[in-house]
Image (tube, rainbow, N blue to C red; front, top):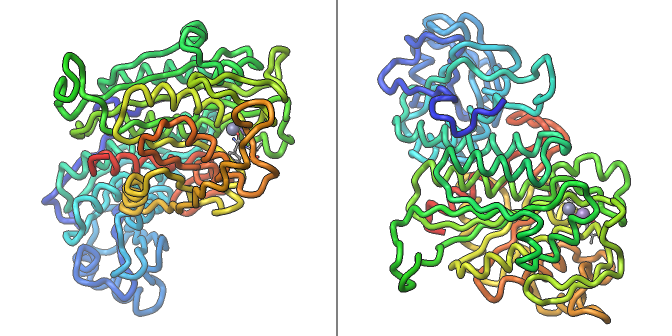
Length: 504
Ligand code: BES
Ligand code: MN
Ligand code: ZN
């Protein structure tokens, strides 16, 4: 079932000098902005068809509006069986993010049926980053959430060909797509198939394929390491918890900063890996529980981004911590009123077992703090409150260090994923004080719940520059969009790759 990061599995090839009209393929995809065929590859295809696109545009049948997808069968002058024209919106607003979605829209449209070769025509005016993101979008759009269906809803192309695109950018785009599709597959899989040990096994497989160092801490190792937060949350499940550490050294800086050891990593990534969140004894209602297989989306995103970064051989040193638990209601489940001594020594009074992610992350962040990274970025489907604040498509950012947060926001902007920063005023700290322990795991009431959760995490980063990304909204989409099937989105994989490329 898996194919990500297997050399050659995606079969994306590049024909930089073939003319679009001459390519032998089942379909030829060309991109068109508003206001007619313009001067680039859409104009070239238009000329080959004897002005068909311009006539359709003049007749108002082809508008170039964003993500409009118009299939033209047996277009004259074109060797491919059909021509698909996909809209980009206003020419001056075309970004790498728009191209990702436009290419994904065309690919998703075509993938409704099994296809042989499908060709995409890049435009000479695109930057290499824009080509990369378009290539990635095309390879993500043809993959859906139909993992367990006999009759597939989406069908991967027999082969994808990119025309008028530099081969290095096409290769990189394919690797980025592997990352996004890996994260999506892990989230879309059933929670009975993805549990802490099986997720750790996936990490080991991916680490093997991409050359990452890996450590897997089992429940005995977690006891030795005093990871009482992870252990407490995991106690209600028959599936014991795990902590995965991944290391990637791409900067070639061994031994510079610390005598006799490796230089500390430039960037640490941390992921929430609650493989299923029933809420524990503070049980979720059935409606809210249905999609809770998505509660390991942060873990999937950091694993996938790290594999992508390693495959691209980006010059950076990374350490990654993933906390894996299943939050269940078994006889040993942790209880309301319990007091947990986290690995850092901070005591946590449990007011709600459904606020489990922050307790898991407390220990993972403490382990990562010990690695002395320059910056920490954590990803978590942490709070419903963040979805109330920002909606389903926007990730929340929270930080103790503005330049760190700005770097995450800039990386997200470069690939077109919306993020928005929320405040971390010191007054919010009052809300997580407890009468019996150092802190409690919820705020006073539900107001500002995304921020009080972030404030809780801040207690465990030891002053290291840190940004928390709450992806409870964008990680999982109940409905389909033109560019993606419903289910897992692969949210934040592309921004993390960009962040690493920018040096962290
Ligand atoms: N995993 C949930 C948050 C979530 C909600 C993710 C919706 C994706 C979609 C988290 O563990 C949780 O249950 N949070 C509680 C916290 C509350 C009990 C303080 C919430 O948001 O209701
Ligand atoms: Mn929960
Ligand atoms: Zn959760």
